[in-house]
Length: 195
Ligand code: DC
Image 1 (cartoon, rainbow, N blue to C red):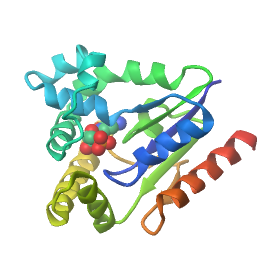
Image 2 (image 1 turned 60 degrees about the horizontal axis):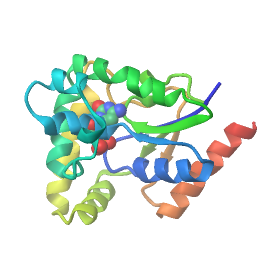
Image 3 (image 1 turned 180 degrees about the vertical axis):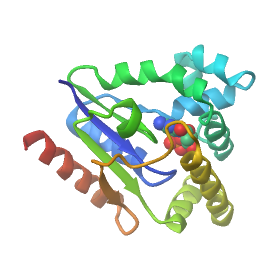
Image 4 (image 1 turned 90 degrees about the vertical axis):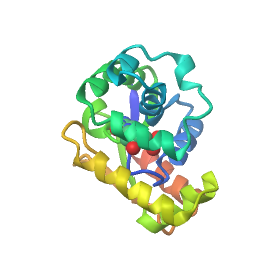
């Protein structure tokens, strides 16, 4: 049974940073699943066709990290056929040997409900907005409004909404440095691996 680490949470909660650090620490490949939805949104046209035909080159576009790409991603991610088109790729990635780290919104609930470790990473809204504003060089108030809009859409959609799995460990990074958050995540993964 491969050792899959599922990391979910709202935008800018720190889940991507934690996922990358865990992948490096435990020598596992990492998939940022938000990138799939960002690429579908950025391609434009029919989002279902875009999801079905997604290529590695689409994921390498330089403009996928912008706030606009995040909003477009959140909108196409509410379409059930888009999500369905991306499930197999994510599951195959999750189930490779000796394991993998995936971060997103529905990894512990839908993509990989049997993951060995599930983390649900949260932080308060103002902290998330400040982090993302610093990262993108944007206005914190505008970021706050955008994150709230995106979280509301991601949480309210009918298919695979943003939600903690019942067996996920909640990690609140509001008052943590990156080092502290990574250390807490490493401790949880080590406990599961050795336990
Ligand atoms: O993690 P991110 O900010 O790059 O994600 C962008 C959008 O993609 C997010 O607002 C909702 C969607 N998404 C999703 O619905 N399911 C995932 N597993 C990952 C992202």
